Structures are given as C-alpha cells and as structure tokens.
Length: 254
Image (cartoon, rainbow, N blue to C red; front, top):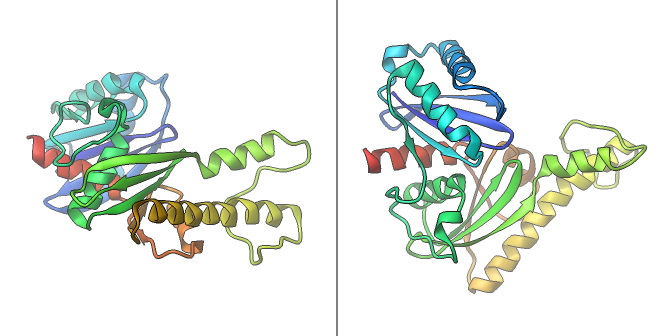
C-alpha cells in the first residue's frame, strides 16, 4: 500500500492506494504545534481503524501547504512505517508544465489536482479545489498549469459572517429550501451556499470568455459536494482528485 498525505490548512487527508484502487480516505485536524511523535501516534491509530497493518505500507508521498509540518510529517511516517516519504516540491517530476511567474510558488495541492485532472480526465480544463480557500486552476491543451484564482473559502466566509456581526450565529453548512430565506439561519445559508455557487458559475464564465472556448470543469475538496450541485454549469465532482494526483506523482518519482 502507498500512503498519500495531503496536509491542508484545516485538515490532513490520508489515502491508501493498493494498485490503482483508493482503499480508504481518512481525515485528521491540522495542528502545526504537534510533534512527530504525536502525529505518528495519531496516524497509526487512524489507519488501524481502517484495518491497515503496519507492514502493509511500502511507500508514502506528501503534499503540504503548511511548511512547519513538512519535516514533522516526514519523521512521523518514517517513525511508524520505516519509509522515507516523497515530498511534492520544486524538482519533482510532474509530467505537466507550470507556466507562471514563479513556478516554485504554486501550491503542492494545486499541482496534485492538476496532475490528476490531466491524466484521469482531459485538458484544457478548469480545476476547482474547494477547501480552506477556493482555488480555480486553468490548464491548457497540453495539461500545463497556466494560472489560477484564489478566493476566500466557503467556511472562512461563514465564520467571518458570524464572528464579525453581533447578531448572526454560527450555523451548519447546508442549502436552504429557497433562495429567499425566511429566518436568519436560512438567510445565511442562502447567501453562503447559493452565493458561492453563483461565484463559481461567474468565474467559469469569465475563464471561458478569456480563453475563447467552453472548458471542461472538475471540482474537488471537502466543500465541493455542498456547493457545485447548485451551480448551473456542468461540473464533474471528484472529491479525491488531490489524493489521486499524489499517487500519480508517486509512481512517476519512485
């Protein structure tokens, strides 16, 4: 089994691949203050819940947007499984071009999502990753990353709305029955869910107008399933796109 680990600002997502099959997906909270021993204990416990034997892990690969955890996670994986993880970083073989001002500044999660979209689906395309931030990535005919938009994430907006006002509460994220809410909670849900769906639709229209064609659109990330089903554009949802990209990169770099 190959362990794919995506370290995000909110969650660390772990996936186990046997051959081409993703056998399990697990999530733990991101905490930059935890030590390698604490993460080693947590990961071993989480994988045990999925009946993954310690001896089954033959390799690992990590993408991260939280630099303080890079060495911590590498040490944790080596401590538990005795394998040296591959890091998605400048110099790794990706199989796609990165056409931007500073290729080294492109987030590892963005690269993984684009790699998977190009190899599993098709290019040119837009790849939308809805996590702590919402990222929209443009890929050209060759599958090269040519640019992106970064938008405050759905949860960030929802938390800001509640914490920045005196009378609006913290709420769960789900769509209301109507765009016109009849109570405070439904009004907030309408704005957050339908508002973000409209934002995605509007950005897709802008990208299509700029490139001069109707692009295929793929969506991933923990919040994508809540939002994209309310979009007017046809969007293919693949919540495990980053993990799949990690596995593709692992095979390219072993």
